[in-house]
Image 1 (cartoon, rainbow, N blue to C red):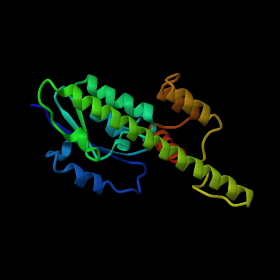
Image 2 (image 1 turned 180 degrees about the vertical axis):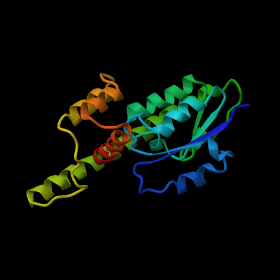
Image 3 (image 1 turned 90 degrees about the vertical axis):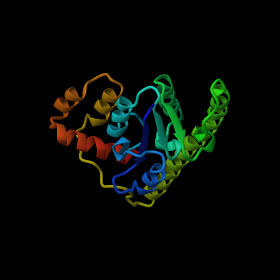
Image 4 (image 1 turned 180 degrees about the horizontal axis):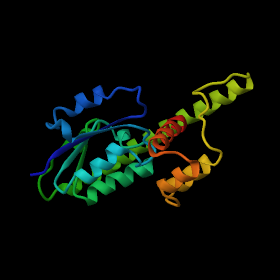
Length: 202
């Protein structure tokens, strides 16, 4: 019999995970099977999520509070769902009741078809919301700059080549060790700067 797992995520360290934990408690008995991240949902580079992907096996069930906890990008969310599907892991999304239903043997395709339609709609909404937020932020920043104001976090002190090297690293063109070497940072400092940088562009 498969095990039940949970995944929770917030975008920044200042946000609380309590509400998502409470939502998962009725379904996931073992707290050690609830994986969490306080990180952006833009990509798969999240420690808790990577551990989760290694922990689950065929026959397991993964519970999440809402579809956007997997990520904010529609294409990435669909890739993650496909990853779990091919691994034989059932994903149940608490905020999407049809995904929580069980089905008679031999009729799995009916619920899968319905779920695919619903997930398509919700991932589109999640991405649209994200794009709207970014657009509003961009417009607000442009307006503030026009008035001579400075908004947001203080500028990060990063090496000149950081943006270029970060993109190369994310695209798999260079390894983290090479990145650290080029920016002359120790591992702890490097990952701290990566986290700060990703939060600043989230």
